[in-house]
Length: 398
Image 1 (cartoon, rainbow, N blue to C red):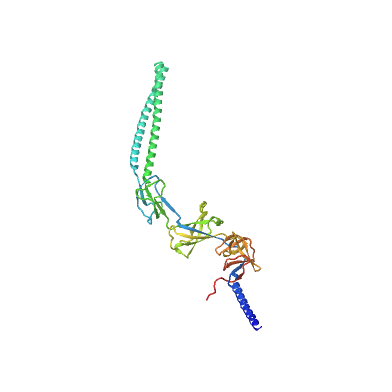
Image 2 (cartoon, rainbow, N blue to C red):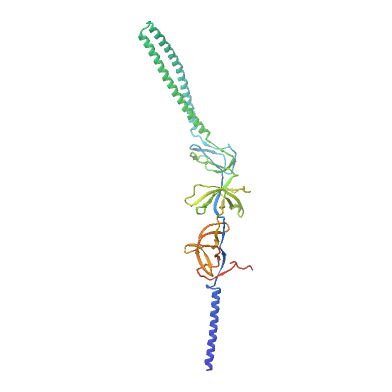
């Protein structure tokens, strides 16, 4: 009997120890294990009129670019400037090779002189023909009067009238020849002037004062008409060619304020504005192109081609419920937020709108003012997961 009681006491002791261990395990599992509540921060949905922002990447470009090249195809004879050189308006920057243009001008000049001599010769013929017409007319009139007096025969009168008509016809022919000679001379003069203009256009002249930004050809290079040989820019006026996502660019227009962050001036934001929005978008990248200029000239002018980050503030929208960007999650292919209702956690799909620089995003459908949504969570959330609301997920400072 005594042994039985002793064994029973040991069993109760062992059971008590096992129960304590089980309770301790459950306690640990509920506090720190997979069944432990997930720490989250929450916020209450409110209404506000947000000012959405549009972010884009661009490159610094010269606002005014002058591409200088030949008006006709030819070979580059010389280039007198290098990238980085400052030039003045009217300065000769280089020259195209005339090749056989000078010979053409000489030949054309000789042809024009021959045409001019031909005009003078025909003009002399006109004087002679006029004299013959005048003489023939006087003879025809004289013989007509003599014929009336029957001093000469009718045949003689007719012969003089015929001589007068022949002289008139000859004069008309010579006048036509003179007009043709003058037209030929005019054509040759025009062609000579064109060749001389070509000769004068062989010099590559800067139309403005500026900075040589590019040299696209060296002596001996063949260039076609309109091809750029030298590029001149205004060094003091630059803007940024920015690309924005088409889907988010609604409301983008000229005169909107912008913040510019240059890569060479990291951390320093510069004031700017949208100068214009291009009418043609990039169909490949699905981006809208816009030009953004500095409101004030930067102390250190950025290099052409430098990258810049541009943020444009669009117009203020109507008041709607909003949530922080950090609260937005994707669950089963749907965008939405985790909502806390009566202590239960559930995912709500939401149709979102625009967002602003403060990280606020419009909730157009799916949420109402006053609901509590999870902003940050320590772990990935699931429906009905136990949570613990905290002020911050950051560990306390030591």
